[in-house]
Image 1 (cartoon, rainbow, N blue to C red):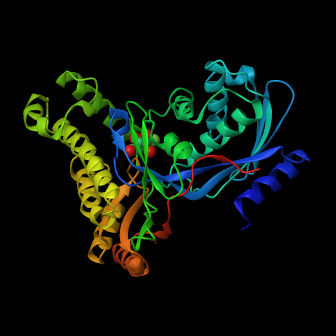
Image 2: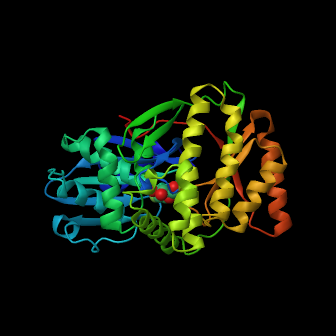
Image 3: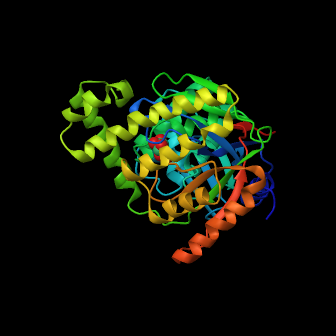
Amino acid sequence: MTDVEDRATAGFRSAYGQEPAGRWAAPGRANLIGEHTDYNDGFVLPFALSLRTVVAAAPQDGERWTVWSETTEAQIEFAAADVDEPGRVTGWGAYVAGVVWALREAGHAVPGARLAIATDVPLGSGLSSSAALEAAVLTALVDLGGLDLPADRQPRLAQRAENAYVGAPTGIMDQSAAIRCREGHALFLDCRTEEVEHIPFDLDAAGLAILVIDSRAPHRHADGEYASRRKSCEEAAAVLGVPALRDVAVADLDAALPKLPDDETRRRVRHVVTENQRVLDTVALLRAGRAPEIGPLLTASHASMRDDFEITVPEIDTAVEAALTAGALGARMTGGGFGGCVLALVEAASADRVAGAVADAYARHGFTEPATFTILPATGATRLD
Ligand code: GAF
């Protein structure tokens, strides 16, 4: 397959018979640690992938947007009236229309445009292909229209597109990662204040690698489960009399848990509160140049997602266990859950061996063979040319 940039350009030329005015790219993300903490006003530590979504675009007259997608090999068109009525544009087009809608709602004069989209971010694998699409389209439209919307304000707008237009009640992590990450760094984000710190995460220098194991597990009721976890967290915060679970510290847990109505809610709260602390502990180790020591925190995060937040599936747990048995320093599911990918922190020299051990374990269980690859922290959304 040709390079994603070339595919976007070729798609643009054949769809519109003209040259694009420019090309913009935004990455998928992996979250090193901090899961389901973002909508609890907490802390996350994602980094961008070198797998990207590329948008080739040019302005067109009027308030009309024409979009060709490599994934569907289809072209859609919508006008301002379609955009302004959420629900009219559906499927993958809703992510594009949602961005136009959110920009217009925030008072920006969005330029009409022709867009062609190609991507290397696997869809439905928990690596946030949706935020990559939103971020790539958003940066393209902001640039084409010369809109006054600095990068630090873009994630909230892209999140609004996803929440209010697409209808998925997600937090701010994925859009922040797609827009604000820096190459060679993880993004330490305070989801309440949106303050960020770029934490050096030089895997090569530490002799380490992050192995991604795509579980290939079909998503099982993921949307409803995500929404119900979020609701349960918000209800728990209300019972505890705090604005969000971020305001409960690990030291407060023993006093807080008995106030909650049932055991399930207590487990949900324990996950979020301890996960926030694990993010802070991971950041402290990375700041101190002690990357190999974060492994146990990653593994503890996984156990918390499996036992307390209950968002893992057998394929995912099998991948984590097999990776750890084969010598990974730590391993955890990344992303919203119910499928998706596992990250294993490994000595660089042992990445192939760990990948092989996971594939063997999958074969023993009769699971679909997993896809495995290593990744390095890459850059957030950019204009290419
Ligand atoms: C999904 C959501 F989009 C994020 O906002 C975040 O909540 C994540 O699941 C879980 O940490 O990726």
